[in-house]
Each structure stands twice: as structure tokens, then as C-alpha cells.
Length: 129
Length: 392
Image 1 (tube, chains in turn brown, cyan):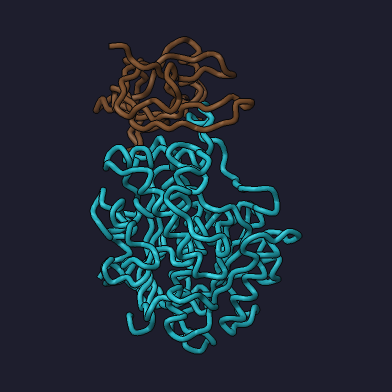
Image 2 (cartoon, rainbow over the protein chains, first blue to last red):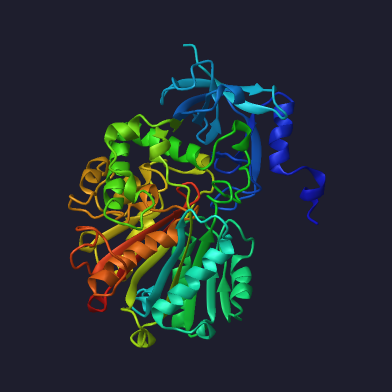
């Protein structure tokens, strides 16, 4: 077995381990500096394996957003968004701190780690500028 | 000539059937699927013992082609149960055409069956998506809603434009006694817009039906096709492409791989979008036909919202003439029903009896049909172009 598989965890667990440590890190191509998400063992499309984890700025823009309708007894309506990170990649998330149907495309948002669930996840708040 | 063009016009569908479309309590997915297979073989005048290629995918069977061949009691020499979502069957058609033309098999059956409605509702075998499941998306509708929101934003389209797709589908269904919503009367834009919201901007009537239903087609080489009972419908062009599995990985939320699959399918066929007499598009949600009309080249990006004003029975662009997944039938994976309608319009045109419709439900003398399948969350895109013999 290649050493890498025994010396460290896979990129999915690594991502969540970073979140548990309070850091939002994503991978980038060491040679080109290009970021990508979600975490992978090699750069998507080219297969380059020289990657590094970098903490993101947390700044992003709402790329698309929709209100998922849900009965109040099941938790009520909630927001689901695709956020484009300042570093380039997009990720699915929820934008909090606004009515779930009032999150507009193009809104500036900031990432934070939400630890209220079973495992940590990245959510976004509307940026105050 | 492109190598793949070697399959242009070399194979044909010679039999088709559907079974149990609507609500069929007391029937399993396999029973419905096998019924469709036997009916399709009867339509072709081909004996079951001649079937040596079998293609199937469902959300009920992990190894659908094997389960189906056992149930039918046959021993296929080649089988394919690849699952790329609702477009799987249009991809099976490509594999079947290659296997037939290369002589691996002589008679292919492609089948699907579902009793999801009677068995409790929408049936999926999709696993939760990593990095997305943390946010509780309701898949697949949440994904299509995110694409729709982006489309509305980028191109200044309105919810009314989405609603128009559902209204036109219903208008076609009113002409088709087989359609699940045939007797429900017309829809208005306001009916669609005021329906219960599911995931904005999509409401209940922007989403496809949840029905039971099975379908099957029989394919053979063109030289054998003429000996069959029915009028052969020839495969002139076929291509597929996919990129993402998760909506958050889609490179552009308003541009699908139908752009590439359509371009290559048209190239193989030697025809252009404007040559198509019928256009059958996978309409799981109202945003779909808008994106696919654009990506397949029927109009420019952003113009789909205007073009869909012409897709009803009184319009100039006959799209989803059965009533589609929105108003005819949608048993979970809809691809084979897109295909069935593309074929039936041509069979009727050739004089075969493929059922009765009200005035206008059968198009006048169509010769070329486009069938386009979609799978996952605007992920896998497969385009097939069908024609009567004179179009080869």
C-alpha cells in the first residue's frame, strides 16, 4: 500500500477534521495555485496529485439560493444556497440570519463553522459592510 | 467520417409498449416491466426466444438486467444495466446500436418498470451526496430549484415563464387519452403559480407526476427490421455526455451537457434542430425544457423563456406531445417514455395504429423526432434522433 494511505486520513475526513479544529480549509493545486472543492485525492480533470490544504478567507457571494418549504413541525422553511467562495470554487450551504426566502443572488456572505449538528458544517452569514 | 457515424441508420426500433401507466395497485415493478417487454415483442412480431440483448435500469433492482432476464427466462449474450439516472435508457439505445451493428447481438430489448406510486411514493436509490447532505436538500427538487433560480436571475425570466411549460404540457395531455391528467381539464398560469410551493421557485405543478409505469422497446439491425410487423423507426443520431453528480459541482447552473450531446447527435444524424418535426424532452421540472431547448440549439441561451410560449398544441414547436412527465406519466425514471413518444409520433405518421388521440394530438406527417433524456440533477444528458426510412 502506498505510504500516503497509511500515514494520513483521506481528504473527506481531513476536511471535517479541520472543521472540528475550527478551521475551514480547502485544497489547491500546488503547481498552479488553483483551488477546488469538494476535497479529492487528485486535481479534478488533470489528475495532478501535488495538492495542499489552505485556510479560506471565508468571503463568498451567493451564486444561487432557494427556500426549501417544510412544515413547521418538521423544522419549518430553510435556506439552501450555492455560495461561490472568494478562492473560486462553489459549495452548497445555508445562508443564515435572513428569512430563508430573502437571500438574494449576489449577496456578500461570510463563512463560519456551525457546530450545532452531529458533525461540523460550513454555513454563511450575510456580510455587514 | 467520424467512426461513431458507422451506427447512423444501421438499427431501428421495431416494437414498443408501455404497461401500467398511472396507478396499478397489486402489481410489482418487475411484473409491469415484463408485461411491457412481452407487449413490445408482440408489437414487433418477434418471439421472446430471439431476444439475445437485454438492457434495463430501475430504482427497484440493484441488477435490473439480470433480474429481468431471469424473470423472462432468457439467456442474453450481452446485457447492460448501467444507471445514469432517468436518461439511462437513451444511453442503452446507444450501447444496443453498437452491439447490434458489431454483431454481438441480433435482437435487443430495453426496459424499465416502476410501481412507485402504488408502493408509497417517489422511489430513489440515490445515496446522500457528500458535502451536500449536511444541508438537508430535498433531492432532486432542491437541485433543480437552484438551477431555476439562477436562470431567472441571469436571463430575467419569471415564474410565469416556468408555469407556461406546465400549462403547455397539460394542453397536450388533454388530447391524449393515455395521459394521467387527461381528464383533469386545462391549467392556467395562475393555477401553476399558486400551487403549493415546494422549493422556490418550483411549486407542486412545476414538478413531474409520481405515477406507476413500465415501458419497453425492441431494437434490431435495419436489414432485419423490414421483416417485422411494425414500421421500423431508425436511429439516425445518438450521443451522450455528463459531468457532475451533485448540483454544487455543476460548472454553470444554466448550461447542461445537452449542449454537447445535442451537437454530436445532430452531427451524426446530418440534420439540424430546425429539421425536427417533434421534440421530446425530459421534463421532470418546468425549468428542464427551457434549458434543453437552448442547449440543444433550438434557440440561443436565454431565449428558451420566450420559445416555450410556442410549445403547446397551438404553437409552432411541438414539444412533449404526450403531455410529458408533467401531465402524462412519470414513474421515477422517465427516459424511455420520452423515447416512446418520439417513436409513436413517427409510427402514427407511417400509418401504424399506436392509439387514439383527439384532433391535433397526433402531428401531421412528422418524419424526424428528437428524444432527449436527462439524469441525476441536470447531470447526464443523452440525445437520440429518430427518423422514418426516407430520412436515412
